[in-house]
Image (cartoon, rainbow, N blue to C red; front, side, top):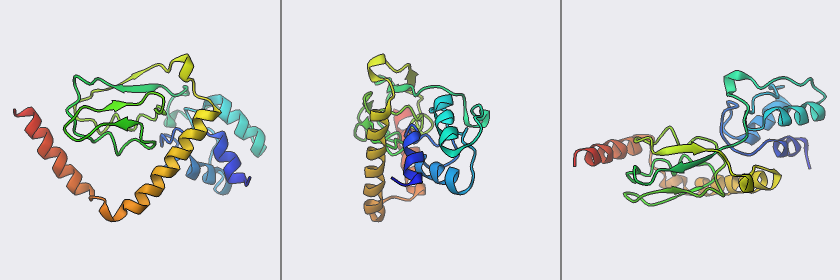
Amino acid sequence: MNKIDKINNMLPQTQCKRCGYSSCRPYAEAILFNKEDINRCPPGGNEVVEELANYMGLEKKPINPECGISSSPKIFFINESECIGCGLCIPACPVDAIAGAFKFMHTIIKEECTGCELCVEPCPVDCIKVTNRPVELAWNFQKAEKSRIKFEERQKRNQIDKTHKHPASSLNKLKNKYIKKSFNK
């Protein structure tokens, strides 16, 4: 296993972007090649900082507050009675943990949710809520590895589907049309 993979495997694989990078792997690469700080991963917390510090021979630091507060990954859920079925949460999820179809209610598969929070911002009706992760779904290496694999599979699929991808302006037009239509009924 190369050094990037070792560093990447130390990260929690929530793909939350709080570190300022597009996913966990680019952050791992930046740590190795660009001497990026090892304290930019709130979901990993002090445990990941300590592991990275030991591996890289660096001093431990507290989590950078600009990246967020250190906490283990939560679970998100959709209040289905408030969901309008716009579908804007689905492409935001980096691990395909949201199921649903356009104009139908959506749900977050709790066993797959990384707690990244990326689905919250695009929701126009704020129906996505946070809750504590149950003990039986505690984040661990196996869940992180499964999350990394799901993320990489999604990335590959998105590369294949690039020719079918709608530009952001088309998504915004659809969002505006659908939301106005839903609230003006």
